Amino acid sequence: MPSQATCRTVSPDIGTAIAAQKSLIAKIEKQLWAGGLNAALLASYQAAFRELEALIAAQGEDGRHKFVIVIAVADRPQHLKSCLDSLLELCRTFGYGGRDDGCYRKVAVLIADDSVDAANISGNRELAQRFSELGLATTCFGPDEQLALLGALDAAGQANLSRVLGALPAGGLSVASFGHKGQAVMRNIAALKLATMAQDERVLFYAVDSDQEFKVKVGTPQGDQDVCAVNFLYRLDEIFAATDALVLTGKVVGDPPVSPAVMTGNFLEDVVGFLRQAAAGADAAGACRHHDADARREGEAAYHDMADLFGFQAAGAAYRYRCTLHGAHSEADCFDHFSARLNGFFYGEHPTRVSYYVHDVIMATVQPARTVYVGNYVIRPAALKYFIPFAALRLRMSGPTLGRLVKSEIGGRFVSANLPMLHKRTVTGTGQSEFRPGIEAAARTIELCGEFERQFYGDVMLFSMEQLAAAGFPHQPPAGDAIAATLDRVRDDMLDKYNAKQRDIIAKLAQLESILHEPSHWWNRSDRHAAAVGNFRNFAANVAHNFGAASACYCRINAAANWAPWRAKLIDAATRYPQDRRAWEATLAAARRAAAAPPQHAS
Image 1 (cartoon, one colour):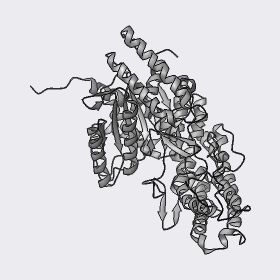
Image 2: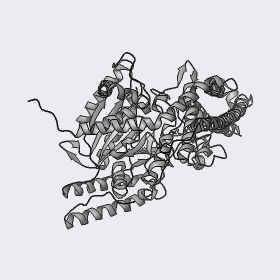
Image 3: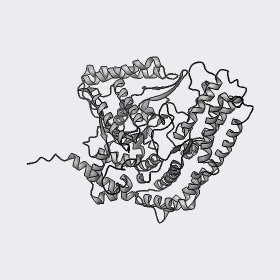
Image 4: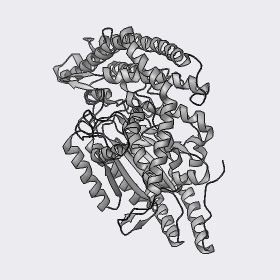
């Protein structure tokens, strides 16, 4: 790939010192990750980067990229604060770009707020002010600003972009009921905002989710650690300076980025395995046996029930739970603790298939990509043209769908790199998400049908777009009813796969019920473990409710009466996608012209 780097003139002494410092960083980095994280070297590694930044500042002009970090949030104040805290820690730890008048020169934040709670909207503005005072220039792009931006479009522009930016509130422009538009619509509105800002090619837009942090999760003999050990901004500048990449995506470590709708079979396998291990000759009062070194295994998409759909090999056996308790504790203590974590699965946790960071030299990991992780991707300003497709339908899998379309157009200029962010689905202490669309909880019953349905039709649209893009879509219009025929064929195939997975879940659920209720097992011989057994029973009941034989979720996706309106919406969205692209690009061009125009002064 040709380089986009600019020529930088430095004095020989400073240039030599910078080169020597980079060489030192590479040596420390190699030692830091040799055989796993060497925590004793982490402080030295971070300090070496700060020394490099001081040398870069001494050379004069710093031509590296600036970053505008866009954080999409909807009623997640604790998550948002943790995300901003981690970004500030990243800036302080590695010092990318240095500071000027107390503010980090090359880092700015845009909070794209899709909240509905007035207290959260106000609180997000206060967070923006607080972090700005701490040196992290932060702007809150709230409902008022969003409506003003959309209100600047004429009626035709608003109508033409309704599938991209969503419909305006009923009754006209009003803040009331303008939240919870969905992550895709919110990101597209934020992209339009970015287009109105003064830009140059040395700016990178970095989209992240509020439930992520600028850290990585590593497994150590002492347990899992979340550490600030990757200099994200420095490495991204390095990649974009050395290549002509237009879009770059990272991934996540920690909690999986997918829905419980496509993880339940694997997790049931692991829960049954846990109970079997706990029952096999165990002494409840004996030392916990769930800290084995082999309890953690990495695997691409190991959490996904249908990993084979994405080209990954499906896991062949249960993953063993790795106990997170510290200090002396018994098998029974682990049993009780694990049972209390089960509920978090329905909010997106996967206690047995956590993803961990595996280090490699960053440039060696840059490779062509096909999936955008919408919570961790970076673009040059020219790539604002790639809005998240079919946003108004609020489908899951919007990132992979976007990725297939981007890949079909720019090929190798769409890349991935080993820069995963730490993902935390739930809030510490509650085991629940602050806000998660499509999930409803009442008493001890958790209803996943909304998310399940969006997942299924998101899969249908994803794999339909993959097939259509391979045939030249959207630049080559499909012949005749090719879109409808593709959607019908993919829907039938996906329905077969989902129904097969339901049968698998029902069989595994029966295994769980059998082993859990076996009277001879130690947890059933004493009332001491009644609460933990109750947690397992409640988990099983929620699995049965959402995925069992009488599941309303499966009734929805199997019903012809439900497929008919979805089919019409999917066909309409796919058919109109080329039109949406033209309208979007025209709107972006107008926004850029307005941003570039000199200010008008009153005479």
